[in-house]
Image (cartoon, rainbow, N blue to C red; front, side, top):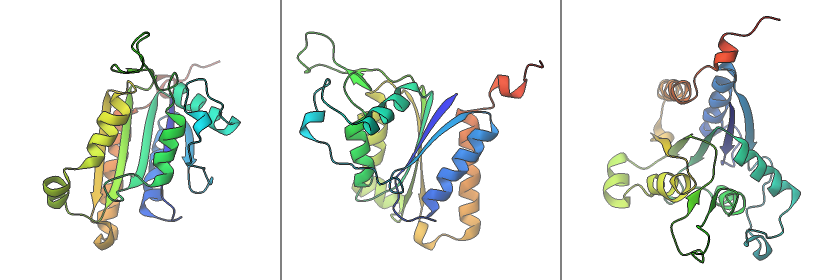
Amino acid sequence: MRILIVLGHPEQGSFNHTIAETCKLSLEKNGHKVIYHDLYLEKFDPNLQGEEIPKDGKISEEIQKHCDELVSCDGIIVVHPNWWGMPPAILKGWIDRVFRPDVAYKFVEGDSGEGVPVGLLKAKSALVFNTSNTSAERENNIFKDPLETIWKNCVFDLCGVKNVYRKMFRIIVTSTKEQRNEWLEIVKQKVDLYFPVEKLFQNPVEV
């Protein structure tokens, strides 16, 4: 399978980077083709231009490449910190520019774009790994865990990806090396569960 990993964290060497690299290594070990984007390292431009908004709008070669990768992948993994209950702006901009109409979703013909969208993505499963310095009690009781709604309902479900798992690791600022190693084991387990060893990779045909 082709699995897309998208990382949104500005600090090289962050725990988010370690999570993303762990995902990449686990996927490759299982025989999958990995498409990997570190948005900050690549200096991805998150600014959506007006001319891009229509479904037949003018987009750059870079955005077209991202769109092509998105529609070709069998699974998606997103890694980012919780900032104000939202993904970092660069990741939000990636969604704005890449999850385009007639790429990630469409509207039923004749409804003037007012109806329920139809998801177009090929990917069946998505994993989202987040980090936070907010306690689970405060996150759930006061903030109502907005990232859960954003990723599961507003993004993936709308675009046809129904099997979504999200895990928040907390509290990062006071975490120990032992805790982080335990968290990385959870990452490996979830990657193996959702994207197990490819059969052809497991039993290669002898030629």
